[in-house]
Image (cartoon, rainbow, N blue to C red; front, top):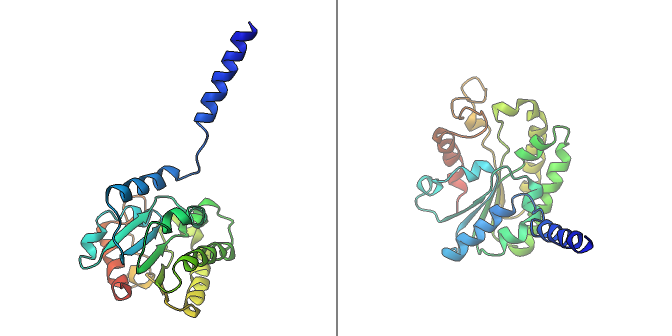
Length: 218
């Protein structure tokens, strides 16, 4: 009986350890590594880092046909996730520019989160980037005001203001403000550029971003 119990416990712990819980988005990072093995990333590309607004921009190359873009957005990610996986997201590449869209999900994940906390997370990421790439262009796209997250707009607005002020003082850094371009003539966020979830873009939304981003693209 003891032998059976011992064998059972051994099998249980073997299965438990083999199925050890991986960090959130671990699989996304493994997929990026697989892509890089199959197609070695080009040098001097523009590296996109961020959340689902980049992830779902699967045809981004069509919007910027003269640019070489490496899209490493992974859906639902927060600035905490970009910080956690910073080495995996930065080490394989030699970009001439990094463009970041992230922070929206930080607020969505915790509605009580203060803007200062999100800004601190961004500054941590920025420092990690600068440690590896001290001189390249680093740009941050303003947190968009998704209609489905209207309750969070005040915190997002405050975070945008603080990050814009921070980036203004940094060399080779820009804050790309997409806010006005996403408004209608009455100053309201255009809902027609979003899909049904009022969170992610239709092509029209990406067309607006493209027009705003183009002058900043290296």
